[in-house]
Length: 256
Image (cartoon, rainbow, N blue to C red):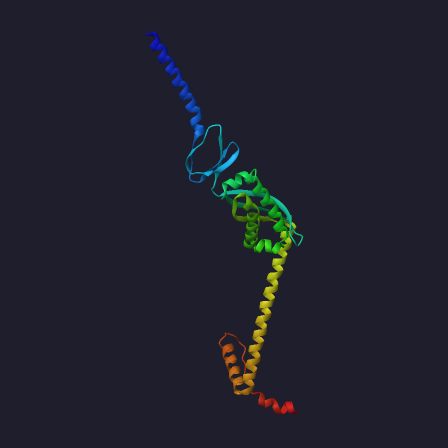
């Protein structure tokens, strides 16, 4: 009887040890990856492959896994002081959208792809915007965003990172430059108003010349126009009376 009890106690102790070992090893052996995750597997320091999604089996102690997220992420590029091509100081910031398309390259070819992409975006932002004049920076934002995206994506492509979009969020100018731009816009509006007025005077003069040419061909048209003017003046309530006199009556005196 005591032998049976001792045997049961040994078996129970062994089961406890086995349960403890399984509790320690199972979390290291089985991993579950979501649909947007991949696991880069290293065995004894040597790269095997990228696995996932789903259930992943690892050899304890021997295998190590680096989990990578394949979703699009964003980073804010902090405000950068730049000098435009026409020597105007400005402060700009931007946002970068990117995702990992090659998890193996993102692990073995760069130490920290997130930090590296952020620094590349900062230096590219200063470089590209420093080559553009202020007018293009304010009016051609889409072209500048496209150029930034192409340059940054070209530099991050070896790391397995795809830059999908770059957007310049804000362009801050000094107060003195804002006042100068306001004066320039006001002067431009005044210039346009004067041009429109001059064009109207020119067109009116052309129409008057055409009317004079037509009246010179038909003298009776001048008399009709004179009578129409008298009618318009008579329709108003006034005490002034006009009497039309033919110009021919004075032709004899004019000749003398």
